[in-house]
Image (cartoon, rainbow, N blue to C red):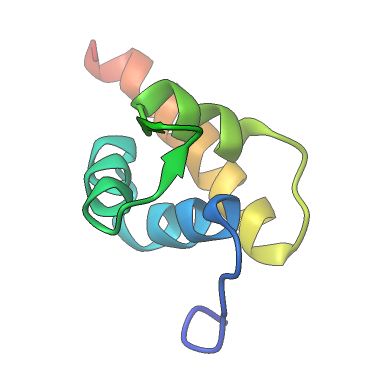
Length: 80
């Protein structure tokens, strides 16, 4: 599924990278290196988190959202 996924929008690219990296910070760094922008400003972790938490548009997005929520729950137990 991951190998054949083609992202055409900023949102799809953010979800795709999150599924691979499982780190919002690394996704933001990767998207900003590729010159993705919202308006004239660079993306932030808040932007990427809200993209991932939004209603899933496809299976990849659903998987990314599930992983994000799982990581948030586990972070509470680790004190993060």
